[in-house]
Length: 288
Image (cartoon, rainbow, N blue to C red; front, side, top):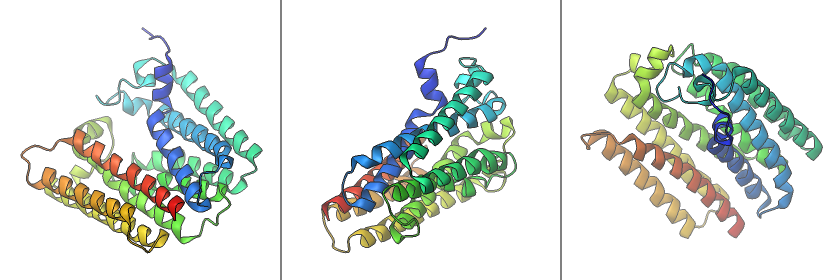
């Protein structure tokens, strides 16, 4: 029995929170490039948001069979029947087409080319690799970094500048432990759905150490980026340092001291860390 379509199901199809986070990273990069908030970034940001939503919808169309086999994803719009596969594909194509048109009209050609490349990388290579190797997230993490270069180029910056590269590396290093936390909690579901999982290659203690290592690497890059944006130690710099130390202490405590891993707290903390640090980078640039 088919369920009734709702706006909420459309938000789930485009992964609204994820699409907004992607758009935020692009806007943050653009603001950091210019040094102030500029309304000229709004039109490209709309195009980036539409592309992100379309790519997410297309990904859910591609993975609808796998999603139907997992408890955490079977309530998504396509496997639950809230949206038919045909309509899900049509929504994804409409969003992708709209995003491309918006970026064409904005005249941000490098941003457009990067967006098209990211769709091919995410919905082509990464989605395919997920069924082949548990390490697919490593190349897949680049999809979260490309919007940084999109925002930077939309602001008129050179995508080979040091700052966007550092921001992109920071996001890549953050994304990998973020996804592997999911694998740590839902590994059995992924395996039963037909995906290769890390727990088949590493023990629980090894996976914990790997996640801590990647978070430590992300932490080091975030501190390096601070010195690149502004070499002078200030309130924002101290706040970023405190956030880094707090996150590492929390993760180490949850993994190696606490009797039970509270994944909800870990997920929220890791996501909060990335978004707040990126916001602080932006504020640092505006202030200086």
